[in-house]
Image (cartoon, rainbow, N blue to C red; front, side):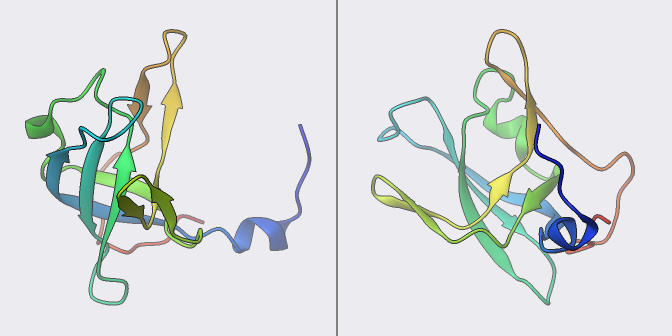
Length: 112
């Protein structure tokens, strides 16, 4: 594991958002959803592709707060442009458990 310093960590924009829209992503090579999340008035709404279909139905994700990296460059995934990275933890079976705030917080709050 490579060590980083505090300045490296400060560059990562880990922010809270609320999922406001979830759609199937049939064009994805690995099963995924298209997700839109509201990161508050300063950041706005961003979209992402997320491979979380093993443990989460679309209805389970709607309205859920998330933790996301919002300052990676946008990434083209087939016909879709992903603007943030939804964070989670890989299980032994490759399913992903979302990293979420333990209590409700303001959208756009920075983890630090």
